[in-house]
Length: 59
Image (cartoon, rainbow, N blue to C red; front, side):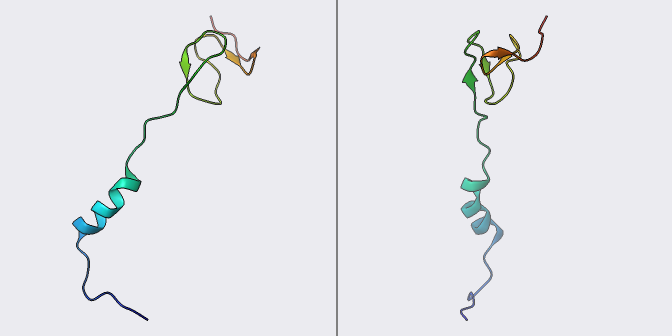
């Protein structure tokens, strides 16, 4: 079984991992009813609509 010749440094390991550990911006979509920006698969906080119907009453 092959074994590494010497221990990899933390900087080399972490720099290799950094691309996968980076935070991505949260996804967003537009509400079909009012056009406000919202996260996908959630009720619109501006108008209360979800999938073409009123889900909650927003005052």
